[in-house]
Length: 156
Image (cartoon, rainbow, N blue to C red; front, top):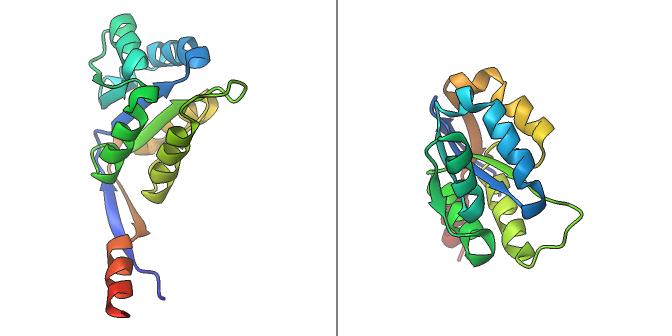
């Protein structure tokens, strides 16, 4: 089956999901504070406690979803699918087991399927937000899965 692609545009104003596991929340809060000037130009959202802490500590507006273990990761994944989130900063703790690990893997998988920028650590987050693409529109091709499904249906 031939793979077909479609262009997707990430607008100048990015829609950024901010998530951190408990052991990494302080690091993410410090990073957000250091990068507040850049982040205030974009739409921010986050899961439960992380979103509330960012709002409280930095004064930045944050759309808050449920806590990760209560479905927040899945809420963010659904918004990635719908094109309502186009960047993921997810500072996870690789040394701490998470009870909702399947949800985390599903979120990372869907972010990869939809080819959005993903930072799993602060160094990558720095590279992303200090990129020239943060202040301009970015157009990139992603695999056209709807076209693939349509082709599969035609073969039956």
